[in-house]
Image (tube, rainbow, N blue to C red; front, side, top):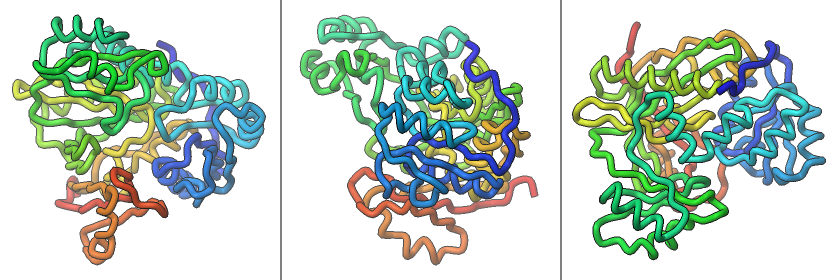
Length: 369
Protein backbone atom coordinates (compact mmCIF):
# COMPACT_ATOMS: atom_id res chain seq x y z
CA UNK A 1 0.00 0.00 0.00
CA UNK A 2 1.56 3.31 -1.05
CA UNK A 3 0.02 5.58 1.59
CA UNK A 4 1.90 8.82 2.27
CA UNK A 5 5.20 8.23 0.41
CA UNK A 6 5.64 11.76 -0.92
CA UNK A 7 6.53 15.26 0.17
CA UNK A 8 9.38 17.74 0.50
CA UNK A 9 10.95 19.25 3.60
CA UNK A 10 8.81 21.93 5.26
CA UNK A 11 10.98 24.34 7.23
CA UNK A 12 10.38 26.14 10.54
CA UNK A 13 8.34 29.28 9.99
CA UNK A 14 5.75 27.34 7.98
CA UNK A 15 2.19 26.71 9.14
CA UNK A 16 0.91 23.28 10.13
CA UNK A 17 -2.82 22.70 9.80
CA UNK A 18 -4.36 20.44 12.45
CA UNK A 19 -7.81 18.95 11.92
CA UNK A 20 -9.47 18.66 15.31
CA UNK A 21 -9.22 20.83 18.39
CA UNK A 22 -8.72 18.34 21.22
CA UNK A 23 -5.86 17.85 23.64
CA UNK A 24 -3.75 15.88 21.16
CA UNK A 25 -3.89 18.87 18.82
CA UNK A 26 -3.03 21.17 21.72
CA UNK A 27 0.10 19.22 22.62
CA UNK A 28 1.10 18.95 18.94
CA UNK A 29 0.76 22.72 18.55
CA UNK A 30 2.91 23.31 21.63
CA UNK A 31 5.63 21.01 20.26
CA UNK A 32 5.41 22.68 16.85
CA UNK A 33 5.85 26.12 18.42
CA UNK A 34 9.05 24.94 20.10
CA UNK A 35 10.42 24.12 16.65
CA UNK A 36 9.37 27.45 15.18
CA UNK A 37 6.17 26.41 13.39
CA UNK A 38 2.76 28.07 13.58
CA UNK A 39 -0.39 25.98 13.84
CA UNK A 40 -3.82 26.63 12.33
CA UNK A 41 -6.58 24.57 13.97
CA UNK A 42 -9.74 23.51 12.14
CA UNK A 43 -12.47 22.68 14.65
CA UNK A 44 -16.01 23.57 15.66
CA UNK A 45 -15.59 25.45 18.96
CA UNK A 46 -13.33 28.34 19.93
CA UNK A 47 -13.01 26.85 23.42
CA UNK A 48 -11.46 23.56 22.33
CA UNK A 49 -8.05 22.83 23.91
CA UNK A 50 -6.00 23.30 20.74
CA UNK A 51 -7.86 26.44 19.68
CA UNK A 52 -6.92 28.09 22.98
CA UNK A 53 -3.21 28.17 22.11
CA UNK A 54 -3.02 28.08 18.28
CA UNK A 55 -1.85 30.94 16.08
CA UNK A 56 -5.10 30.75 14.12
CA UNK A 57 -8.38 28.84 14.25
CA UNK A 58 -11.05 28.11 11.66
CA UNK A 59 -14.45 27.30 13.15
CA UNK A 60 -16.46 25.26 10.66
CA UNK A 61 -17.91 21.85 9.93
CA UNK A 62 -15.79 19.23 8.18
CA UNK A 63 -18.10 19.33 5.16
CA UNK A 64 -17.81 23.11 4.68
CA UNK A 65 -15.85 23.14 1.43
CA UNK A 66 -15.36 26.90 1.34
CA UNK A 67 -13.87 26.83 4.84
CA UNK A 68 -11.70 23.83 3.96
CA UNK A 69 -10.32 25.59 0.88
CA UNK A 70 -9.53 28.74 2.85
CA UNK A 71 -7.87 26.64 5.56
CA UNK A 72 -5.76 24.78 2.99
CA UNK A 73 -4.67 28.06 1.41
CA UNK A 74 -3.24 29.22 4.76
CA UNK A 75 -1.18 26.11 5.62
CA UNK A 76 1.84 24.24 4.27
CA UNK A 77 1.00 20.73 5.51
CA UNK A 78 -1.99 19.15 7.26
CA UNK A 79 -2.34 16.49 9.92
CA UNK A 80 -5.09 15.38 12.29
CA UNK A 81 -5.51 14.73 15.98
CA UNK A 82 -8.55 12.51 16.19
CA UNK A 83 -9.71 9.40 14.47
CA UNK A 84 -12.82 10.19 12.54
CA UNK A 85 -12.08 13.13 10.27
CA UNK A 86 -14.09 12.32 7.11
CA UNK A 87 -12.08 10.90 4.21
CA UNK A 88 -13.72 13.44 1.88
CA UNK A 89 -12.35 16.25 4.09
CA UNK A 90 -8.81 14.89 3.82
CA UNK A 91 -9.19 14.44 0.06
CA UNK A 92 -10.34 18.04 -0.34
CA UNK A 93 -7.35 19.42 1.56
CA UNK A 94 -4.96 17.07 -0.25
CA UNK A 95 -5.83 18.84 -3.49
CA UNK A 96 -3.87 21.83 -2.12
CA UNK A 97 -1.23 20.64 0.40
CA UNK A 98 0.29 17.38 1.69
CA UNK A 99 -1.95 15.59 4.19
CA UNK A 100 -0.46 13.16 6.73
CA UNK A 101 -1.86 10.61 7.35
CA UNK A 102 -3.16 10.32 3.81
CA UNK A 103 -6.79 9.55 2.98
CA UNK A 104 -5.75 6.00 1.99
CA UNK A 105 -4.21 5.39 5.43
CA UNK A 106 -7.29 6.74 7.17
CA UNK A 107 -9.55 4.53 5.06
CA UNK A 108 -7.92 1.55 6.75
CA UNK A 109 -7.53 3.01 10.24
CA UNK A 110 -11.16 4.15 10.47
CA UNK A 111 -12.44 0.66 9.67
CA UNK A 112 -11.84 -2.15 12.16
CA UNK A 113 -12.52 -4.82 9.56
CA UNK A 114 -10.01 -3.36 7.10
CA UNK A 115 -7.31 -2.82 9.71
CA UNK A 116 -7.48 -6.39 10.99
CA UNK A 117 -7.61 -7.79 7.47
CA UNK A 118 -4.60 -5.65 6.53
CA UNK A 119 -2.63 -6.91 9.54
CA UNK A 120 -3.44 -10.54 8.68
CA UNK A 121 -2.34 -9.97 5.07
CA UNK A 122 1.05 -8.89 6.44
CA UNK A 123 1.24 -12.10 8.45
CA UNK A 124 0.49 -10.29 11.72
CA UNK A 125 -1.83 -12.05 14.15
CA UNK A 126 -5.06 -10.60 15.55
CA UNK A 127 -7.98 -12.03 17.51
CA UNK A 128 -10.32 -14.10 15.32
CA UNK A 129 -12.98 -11.89 13.76
CA UNK A 130 -15.99 -11.97 11.45
CA UNK A 131 -17.89 -9.21 9.67
CA UNK A 132 -21.58 -9.01 10.61
CA UNK A 133 -24.32 -6.89 9.07
CA UNK A 134 -27.41 -8.20 10.87
CA UNK A 135 -28.56 -9.99 14.00
CA UNK A 136 -28.81 -13.23 12.00
CA UNK A 137 -25.21 -12.91 10.82
CA UNK A 138 -24.18 -12.13 14.38
CA UNK A 139 -25.80 -15.37 15.57
CA UNK A 140 -23.85 -17.32 12.93
CA UNK A 141 -20.60 -15.56 13.86
CA UNK A 142 -21.11 -16.34 17.57
CA UNK A 143 -21.56 -20.02 16.68
CA UNK A 144 -18.34 -19.93 14.67
CA UNK A 145 -16.11 -17.86 16.97
CA UNK A 146 -17.66 -18.79 20.30
CA UNK A 147 -17.99 -16.92 23.56
CA UNK A 148 -16.88 -14.84 25.30
CA UNK A 149 -16.47 -12.40 22.43
CA UNK A 150 -17.21 -8.75 21.70
CA UNK A 151 -19.33 -7.07 19.07
CA UNK A 152 -18.00 -3.71 17.85
CA UNK A 153 -19.09 -1.23 15.25
CA UNK A 154 -16.76 -1.28 12.25
CA UNK A 155 -16.45 2.51 12.41
CA UNK A 156 -16.71 5.32 14.97
CA UNK A 157 -16.34 3.41 18.24
CA UNK A 158 -13.79 4.52 20.86
CA UNK A 159 -13.30 4.37 24.66
CA UNK A 160 -15.73 1.47 24.84
CA UNK A 161 -18.46 3.15 22.79
CA UNK A 162 -20.11 0.96 20.15
CA UNK A 163 -19.09 -2.26 21.91
CA UNK A 164 -21.18 -5.04 23.44
CA UNK A 165 -19.83 -8.03 25.32
CA UNK A 166 -21.11 -11.42 24.16
CA UNK A 167 -21.46 -14.47 26.40
CA UNK A 168 -23.26 -17.80 26.18
CA UNK A 169 -26.55 -16.23 27.29
CA UNK A 170 -26.51 -13.20 24.98
CA UNK A 171 -29.50 -12.63 22.72
CA UNK A 172 -28.05 -11.72 19.27
CA UNK A 173 -31.04 -9.52 18.46
CA UNK A 174 -30.60 -7.47 21.63
CA UNK A 175 -26.80 -7.27 21.25
CA UNK A 176 -27.12 -6.08 17.66
CA UNK A 177 -29.56 -3.36 18.69
CA UNK A 178 -27.44 -2.27 21.68
CA UNK A 179 -24.25 -1.97 19.62
CA UNK A 180 -25.64 0.66 17.26
CA UNK A 181 -24.07 -1.19 14.34
CA UNK A 182 -25.72 -0.61 11.00
CA UNK A 183 -25.22 1.07 7.62
CA UNK A 184 -23.97 4.30 9.26
CA UNK A 185 -21.10 2.40 10.91
CA UNK A 186 -20.41 0.02 7.98
CA UNK A 187 -21.89 -2.80 10.03
CA UNK A 188 -20.27 -4.66 12.88
CA UNK A 189 -17.35 -6.94 13.63
CA UNK A 190 -17.39 -9.82 16.10
CA UNK A 191 -14.01 -10.40 17.73
CA UNK A 192 -13.08 -13.49 19.67
CA UNK A 193 -11.92 -13.20 23.27
CA UNK A 194 -8.16 -13.06 23.83
CA UNK A 195 -6.86 -14.45 27.13
CA UNK A 196 -4.08 -11.91 27.53
CA UNK A 197 -1.62 -11.10 30.31
CA UNK A 198 -1.44 -7.42 29.52
CA UNK A 199 -2.23 -4.78 26.94
CA UNK A 200 0.61 -2.84 25.38
CA UNK A 201 1.11 -0.24 22.70
CA UNK A 202 3.97 0.89 20.48
CA UNK A 203 4.13 4.24 18.69
CA UNK A 204 6.22 4.42 15.52
CA UNK A 205 7.22 7.58 13.64
CA UNK A 206 7.95 7.51 9.91
CA UNK A 207 9.04 10.13 7.38
CA UNK A 208 8.21 10.24 3.67
CA UNK A 209 11.77 9.08 2.95
CA UNK A 210 11.14 5.90 4.96
CA UNK A 211 13.08 6.71 8.14
CA UNK A 212 11.40 5.10 11.17
CA UNK A 213 11.80 5.32 14.93
CA UNK A 214 9.82 3.29 17.47
CA UNK A 215 9.12 4.24 21.06
CA UNK A 216 9.44 1.63 23.82
CA UNK A 217 6.47 -0.71 24.33
CA UNK A 218 4.33 0.46 27.25
CA UNK A 219 1.66 -1.26 29.33
CA UNK A 220 -1.85 0.20 29.27
CA UNK A 221 -4.39 -0.32 32.05
CA UNK A 222 -8.01 0.64 31.47
CA UNK A 223 -10.91 1.67 33.70
CA UNK A 224 -14.44 1.61 32.30
CA UNK A 225 -12.99 1.00 28.81
CA UNK A 226 -10.94 4.24 29.01
CA UNK A 227 -7.16 4.30 29.38
CA UNK A 228 -6.39 4.92 33.04
CA UNK A 229 -2.63 4.37 33.38
CA UNK A 230 0.34 3.81 31.11
CA UNK A 231 3.41 2.14 32.64
CA UNK A 232 6.75 2.84 30.97
CA UNK A 233 8.27 0.46 30.01
CA UNK A 234 5.95 -2.56 29.78
CA UNK A 235 7.14 -5.43 31.96
CA UNK A 236 7.76 -7.90 29.15
CA UNK A 237 10.82 -9.88 28.01
CA UNK A 238 13.18 -8.17 25.59
CA UNK A 239 12.25 -10.65 22.87
CA UNK A 240 8.56 -9.78 23.24
CA UNK A 241 9.34 -6.06 23.19
CA UNK A 242 11.37 -6.53 20.01
CA UNK A 243 8.49 -8.47 18.45
CA UNK A 244 6.02 -5.69 19.34
CA UNK A 245 8.26 -2.98 17.86
CA UNK A 246 8.73 -5.06 14.71
CA UNK A 247 4.96 -5.54 14.30
CA UNK A 248 4.27 -1.82 14.72
CA UNK A 249 7.03 -0.86 12.29
CA UNK A 250 5.85 -3.37 9.66
CA UNK A 251 2.32 -1.98 9.89
CA UNK A 252 3.58 1.60 9.65
CA UNK A 253 5.68 0.79 6.58
CA UNK A 254 2.98 -1.38 5.01
CA UNK A 255 0.38 1.36 5.32
CA UNK A 256 2.84 3.99 4.12
CA UNK A 257 2.20 6.22 7.12
CA UNK A 258 3.97 9.57 7.30
CA UNK A 259 3.70 10.81 10.86
CA UNK A 260 2.82 8.49 13.73
CA UNK A 261 1.19 5.09 14.01
CA UNK A 262 0.09 3.85 17.42
CA UNK A 263 -0.51 0.11 17.57
CA UNK A 264 -2.43 -1.41 20.49
CA UNK A 265 -1.61 -5.07 21.14
CA UNK A 266 -2.36 -7.96 23.49
CA UNK A 267 0.44 -10.07 25.01
CA UNK A 268 -0.57 -13.62 25.95
CA UNK A 269 0.91 -15.82 28.65
CA UNK A 270 2.75 -17.73 25.91
CA UNK A 271 4.40 -14.51 24.68
CA UNK A 272 2.28 -14.17 21.56
CA UNK A 273 1.60 -10.59 20.43
CA UNK A 274 -1.77 -9.88 18.78
CA UNK A 275 -2.74 -6.57 17.20
CA UNK A 276 -5.94 -5.02 18.54
CA UNK A 277 -6.23 -1.56 16.93
CA UNK A 278 -4.16 1.08 15.13
CA UNK A 279 -4.33 4.87 15.16
CA UNK A 280 -2.27 7.02 12.74
CA UNK A 281 -2.01 10.02 15.09
CA UNK A 282 -0.64 10.89 18.54
CA UNK A 283 -1.94 8.50 21.15
CA UNK A 284 -2.98 8.77 24.79
CA UNK A 285 -0.44 6.09 25.70
CA UNK A 286 2.36 8.33 24.40
CA UNK A 287 1.73 11.28 26.75
CA UNK A 288 4.61 10.09 28.96
CA UNK A 289 7.10 10.98 26.23
CA UNK A 290 6.65 14.74 26.87
CA UNK A 291 8.41 14.50 30.23
CA UNK A 292 10.20 11.15 30.19
CA UNK A 293 11.27 10.84 26.55
CA UNK A 294 14.30 12.27 24.80
CA UNK A 295 11.83 13.28 22.07
CA UNK A 296 8.09 13.52 22.68
CA UNK A 297 5.62 11.84 20.34
CA UNK A 298 4.31 15.31 19.48
CA UNK A 299 7.68 16.68 18.43
CA UNK A 300 8.27 13.44 16.53
CA UNK A 301 5.01 13.98 14.62
CA UNK A 302 6.08 17.49 13.63
CA UNK A 303 9.48 16.24 12.53
CA UNK A 304 7.96 13.41 10.48
CA UNK A 305 5.32 15.38 8.59
CA UNK A 306 7.74 18.23 7.88
CA UNK A 307 10.50 15.96 6.59
CA UNK A 308 12.97 16.73 9.38
CA UNK A 309 15.29 14.07 10.85
CA UNK A 310 13.50 12.04 13.50
CA UNK A 311 14.46 12.52 17.12
CA UNK A 312 15.77 9.95 19.59
CA UNK A 313 12.74 7.87 20.72
CA UNK A 314 14.37 6.39 23.83
CA UNK A 315 13.21 7.29 27.31
CA UNK A 316 15.23 9.32 29.79
CA UNK A 317 13.61 7.56 32.73
CA UNK A 318 10.88 5.12 33.67
CA UNK A 319 7.46 6.66 34.19
CA UNK A 320 3.79 6.13 34.98
CA UNK A 321 1.22 8.29 33.18
CA UNK A 322 -2.17 8.69 34.86
CA UNK A 323 -5.16 10.14 33.02
CA UNK A 324 -7.25 12.65 34.94
CA UNK A 325 -10.74 11.59 33.91
CA UNK A 326 -13.82 13.46 35.05
CA UNK A 327 -13.58 14.44 38.72
CA UNK A 328 -10.03 13.02 38.92
CA UNK A 329 -8.93 16.47 37.77
CA UNK A 330 -9.69 17.81 41.25
CA UNK A 331 -6.47 16.14 42.43
CA UNK A 332 -4.40 18.69 40.49
CA UNK A 333 -3.67 20.70 43.66
CA UNK A 334 -1.92 17.69 45.17
CA UNK A 335 -0.20 16.65 41.97
CA UNK A 336 1.35 20.05 41.40
CA UNK A 337 3.09 19.82 44.79
CA UNK A 338 4.79 16.50 43.94
CA UNK A 339 8.36 17.09 42.66
CA UNK A 340 8.27 13.80 40.72
CA UNK A 341 4.96 14.59 39.03
CA UNK A 342 4.48 16.53 35.79
CA UNK A 343 0.95 17.92 35.53
CA UNK A 344 -0.77 18.67 32.23
CA UNK A 345 -4.24 20.25 32.19
CA UNK A 346 -6.08 20.61 28.90
CA UNK A 347 -8.02 23.81 29.53
CA UNK A 348 -11.43 22.15 29.39
CA UNK A 349 -14.00 24.19 31.29
CA UNK A 350 -16.67 21.51 31.74
CA UNK A 351 -15.99 18.38 33.78
CA UNK A 352 -18.02 15.33 32.75
CA UNK A 353 -17.81 11.64 33.67
CA UNK A 354 -15.47 9.88 31.26
CA UNK A 355 -14.02 13.14 29.90
CA UNK A 356 -10.22 13.39 29.77
CA UNK A 357 -9.40 16.61 31.60
CA UNK A 358 -5.64 16.23 31.84
CA UNK A 359 -2.89 13.82 32.81
CA UNK A 360 -0.01 13.55 35.22
CA UNK A 361 3.26 11.73 34.59
CA UNK A 362 5.28 10.49 37.55
CA UNK A 363 8.95 10.15 36.79
CA UNK A 364 10.90 7.11 37.98
CA UNK A 365 14.37 5.67 37.69
CA UNK A 366 16.69 7.30 35.18
CA UNK A 367 17.31 5.09 32.15
CA UNK A 368 20.50 5.24 30.11
CA UNK A 369 22.16 8.03 32.10
